[in-house]
Length: 404
Image (cartoon, rainbow, N blue to C red; front, side, top):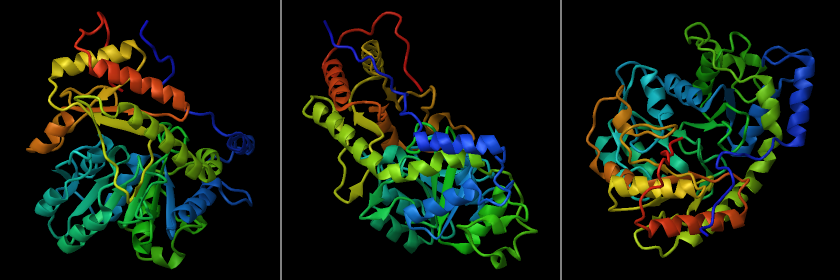
């Protein structure tokens, strides 16, 4: 009988006991709003201070979501209606969505077979004064040394979307620390879990002051501990709008105890990634994604390519894997499904010709790797994928497509 995986691709580990205790303490006193304090330092302010120390940044701001983090960073950097903002063609909808929310225009940059931004296409499309919202999509880091050289030469400022790279690094520099700001997500499926939430780090005092005001500090910006001093706000506080994107103390209390767990979690994800990769090596027609030696990556998801396969075969492959308990996503489908979509369905952005990206996405398969998977689970999943990749059997009758 064929092996079947019975685990869940969306089941995360429990919230740590000390985080639960901290959250209960906040609920007991009831002061959930970050500025509603009674002698104590707000959990949100402490989270910002501790995450800034973790990344080595001067400043940090906690906000409502990773998407809000990107939007605030772009707006604070001066992006507005009609501006053209560079970003990866291979990303998820909140990235171009953050650009479109400001009335700006996404300019998509091609994607390499390594799933990173194409630096030659970036150089061709970069213009002085532009911003690059760089998505480290699914945890794959581009050559950040060369990328920054390209952007500095072109006069392009970089804001990093680190939703998939919290705890990652390039040549020892933490992800999020190359550009003017780094934006992170604490959504359940990411690396620290508060259900929803975001963090922004920066060394730029003016940029951070604008983000604090934008986030909804009113005139209470002096209660931030990982932010510039009050003098930086003097000329900004009456001209920067309040768009209310704050994080609350409940989520901050849940997150603070998870910061020391990040490094061990990264190591655990690496062992699971390596187990999946080892199990999928040498399978005809299936290509894994090489990881450069300079990259310290977070393997919280896994990707592989099925080049040259048509849509009907891939649909059958996905259905056969799903029938055996393995949930895979396909970025080559033109219609969006669940969380998975591509530039073809982002109709708020102008149509753009991206033949290299389309060729990569046509065979790109993706799956989540929660830490609730054991190494034995990863080996079993790899065996199932490998067996079905070699099969031409039809899809099981009635099997639904996997999307989210």
